[in-house]
Length: 506
Image (cartoon, rainbow, N blue to C red; front, top):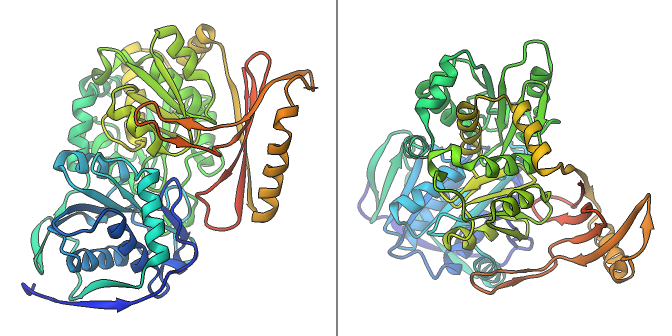
């Protein structure tokens, strides 16, 4: 590799539609492939963080289509901007939780992660890019606002002319004046999991005839699950299903829920059901938990893990607090009340948990959209949640069904469901929300279907750590007795709008 490469300045202009949402910028892959689109946004990331010069970044993605080419562009732009070093997952693969761990372990200045999470992949499907801060968590609102402002003012960007990086071999090379370290994407993450959980107890459970299945959905978690579940814990080879990452996720939709992971649900509901089953999503940060004959909602999963936290080594001293996104059911709040620990309700988006975790106010967090994680990283972590469940099952000796039944007897049950209305015309979706918003003040005291409205508001969040305020985070209608309905417009879709309606009946 030549020691010096030519840096060129490319003239450009602002491109519409580059406002990052709760999980970065997501668009159709072909949009990212258009002239200047990716480059403009990467340059705006660098501008938003005060430049790349002298800084070290973690880079990687979920392996979806265009992942490899995007990394080459990022590397050339980072080199042109004077970055000191890039740490890149081998083959361009790096799950967000593994990247978050690397960010924290190496003390880097941030990470550029390529993922559209659970959205389908392929040239005609979705792509995404987001920036994670040095603490390992997604960029906060102040930072994404700065990046968005930069996208509206950009006039040029710098990039080097040079050969592609070799992403296939672990090791350190020079790319001009910038060092590039290619790392095993699994090794550091697997070592961390072994510190957090009782692998001997889980391995003993497996050796005792316990059966399980893990559906990686042709996505990034496959190599992580094979290395940990099959190689380190001794699960039967083949326990990990669909374990090879694919640019189009095998033509499927890598969202771990009963619709898109139906074969796994059918398996646990059938005559040959394993004792435990789980799935993870496109970039490995979400999870679905199942037992023989039972599906566990993400809201219930969070509550059960909170109630049994002392079963795992990382929480043997107990929890200081828990946090959930506002649309997530109140099940974990009831556990927190019983344990006498703090509980926090935040807007949707993992970045809102970061301050609570950094301040040690919360140590376990979760979202109804299948994200669960702890204070070991600053991302949701699908495989971590699976290992947490396995550790609890090993220590208690109970089945998933038994744990759930006992939990509901102790704390009561939040029956919960979410309905998504997708690709709604944006103006009509906003008109519906505006109409409901205008009626909120008149709803308390009204009755419908045997329920009486006790409260109605638009959720706003005041961060107890830094005092920042986030408004417009969803419309809530509460009923006497503890039930409620929530309405939100999703900002992580690539076309139109998605109206999400959440029903929580206690």
